[in-house]
Length: 156
Image 1 (spheres, rainbow, N blue to C red):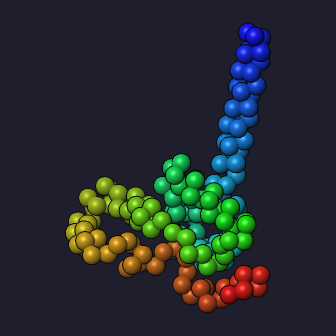
Image 2 (image 1 turned 180 degrees about the horizontal axis):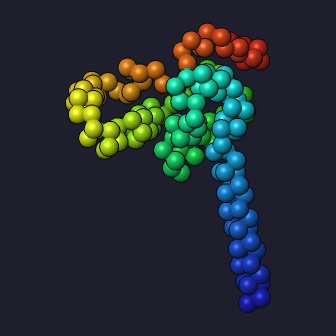
Image 3 (image 1 turned 60 degrees about the horizontal axis):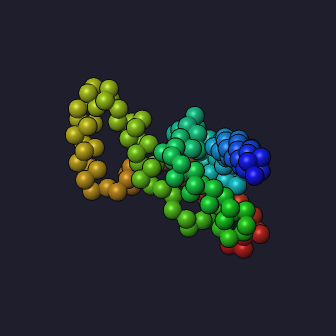
């Protein structure tokens, strides 16, 4: 009986190790711009012509948490299973994460100390605006939105 118990623990341990390694590899692969643009090629092109071509998809659209990864994997599943159109999805875009990431780069302590008028103006704006993109164009170039070619399989 003791041997069977020991074998069972070894099997459980090996299975857990395989799951952790596979999960790590999958997390790394799905956290790259190349993974995102496999469905969102238009967004990548508009981003390349916008104000932030050097910032990655994950850096802007997530906070880098496990919750973000779970939401992203759900969105990927829904897209791959044909339940969501990646060119016009109605899933949440996590605006709070985007705004937090804008603030994290554009309103650093150094910037706020060196530009007090900027700080005062934006503190007032932030009382009324839900997010930065209400006043500012995000990194995606607006002029390119009309040029988007949506694949016919989505029947838009």
